[in-house]
Amino acid sequence: MKKGTKLAIIGIIVIAAVFYLISTGFKQSGVYYLEVHELIKDPSKYDTKGIRVSGDVVDGTVVKDTKNQHLEFVMADGTGEKMNVIYNGIIPDAFTEEVQVIVEGKYDKDTNTFKATTLLAKCPSKYEAEVEKK
Figure (cartoon, rainbow, N blue to C red):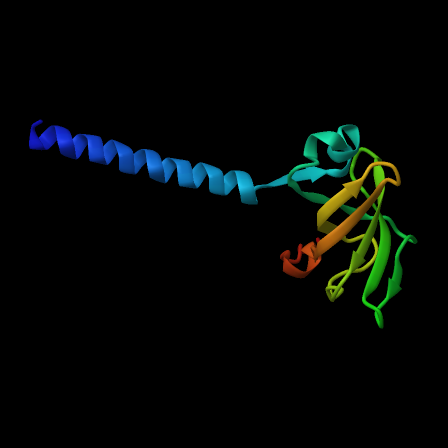
């Protein structure tokens, strides 16, 4: 076998191995990013993967126990679909009612409750430029 043929075969094997490692890494650590209505429509579709859901905190639904780091609220999206969210952990300072949040965790279809392991709160007004009044 010629030296060039051996190098080509070795190169193909190395490229195939790298591609395999990258694709399996994405499959194991991949997370779906959804809105509330997408998750509620077909929750069984996302049972085997991590889920990250974005939505707005519904005003008047927040139950906060900062001493025990426990938080419950209702989350909704633009379509009006809602789900309950339970989170235990450090509550972000930016978290308030009517703020947009992203939660990561598991969804229980029977109770319509999302048990979040991660909670991110967005605060768009903090980073937007002020609009001049005329």
